[in-house]
Image (tube, rainbow, N blue to C red):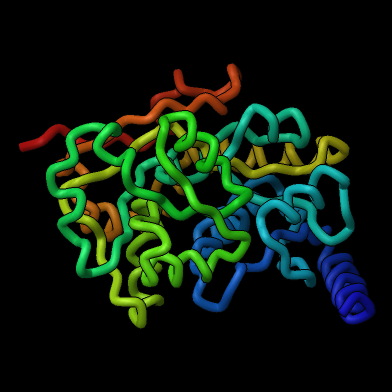
Length: 286
């Protein structure tokens, strides 16, 4: 694997150099069914172009899960230059965050994926306390684990993203909280498990999804930051956001759900909560 990966890196570098741009590597999707990377990659292409075109994005030749990918960033590995992940104060101490939430905080608006026969399990839930006898499934290296445990909610974890759907179908966990921007694609690509979105309920906690780079790569961080700010100013960020998420948000119908608020003890003091334009907010009910 490694000789082939090294060859892929070498070829990409040579091709990038031929076009006058340095290739920066981002993580591959964790599976063929995993569509979570589509928007972050498209946004990365946009912001690198906005920043002057000195960089071009390309997939890492080595597949890796989130925890491994973050360590590659921390160690300034040749296999990975940039990644996107939900932040925490600990992660911001280890790597360099670009503090603009790339999905406007949608990762913190969670709908509950459940087996079809349990679709009304949360029908009468009105508080976080009502979830304390049910177990949620989460990735073992996701910051959400600490957020939900801090709220007193039982968690079962897996190192394998795809296995979480099977755990849910097998009733090893009772629900799988997924972002309103992710859940509909995941529902479509995991039809074999007969899953549905729980009625009437959603979880919310402030949760920025940032691009991260190595602390040794301030130049790349500056380019990404400049590109993001330009995209925000000229409206291209907002247009891309609506292109990818308007349909999902319409289906989510957050305005008519019971929203259970969770605190996020992982947020750093540098989180730009005061920049209202960076965050998604639900509209007032009609």
